[in-house]
Image 1 (cartoon, one colour):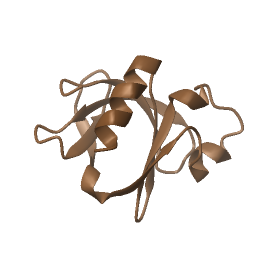
Image 2: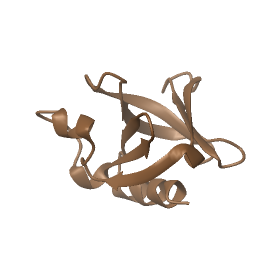
Image 3: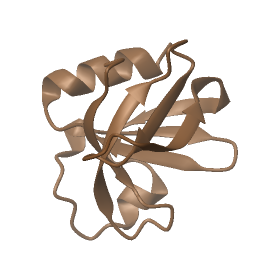
Length: 104
């Protein structure tokens, strides 16, 4: 996971899911995501800022989607004081890794 891999995350306005490249920082204290093709990171979230980890499509943004292409069992959200960041893993094995890392 430290080397990065593809995942989906929602746009800030919740309008759609977009495939993103995600990776942990070297100190494992933050998750970064950005362009899937170039692997250029454009956003960072310190895991210490997270107050909750939601499994499934429990966040308000996920709930607002009439149709989501991702199975609920592959979705999770990192909840912070001022925002929620939603993700969908591509495969069940990746979800297990994501949740273990984020739950630290």
